Image 1 (cartoon, helix red, strand yellow):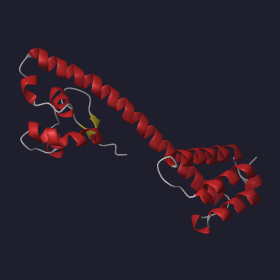
Image 2: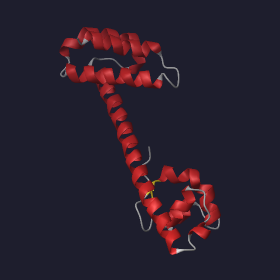
Image 3: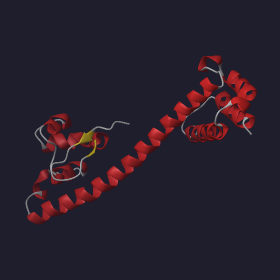
Image 4: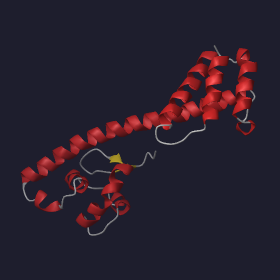
Length: 174
């Protein structure tokens, strides 16, 4: 997940990925300029951003002070919600990256490389479970990995041998 931000001149910036689906409306509202070009020029105003993400033309939104104030308020509320949701997604992505790193470290710690296969991982875990420096942490990581696989399995196939290997790791660490 990218950490790139889209600048808003008079309001909070938002994740770049949030603006991309609205680029066609943005181009209509700004003479064909890309998001990249507008970002180079300092970004959009809050009311311009509001119109863009809601599929609205700049006019008549900008015809009255009330229209401008409503659009700006709408953007502030939307940006706050979007930034909160994106922050949560980023934390979850970082957490998954950390878990995978812990599991790779665990594989190395028990003397197993991915090329050796899942069965070797189970055998190595069983042999060396007593030698691990932090079995509770490894158990937690292996559990998180199994939980992650369970969530992934809802949207695509996963190797059952891999999942079983980590279940065996958990059993070896009890």
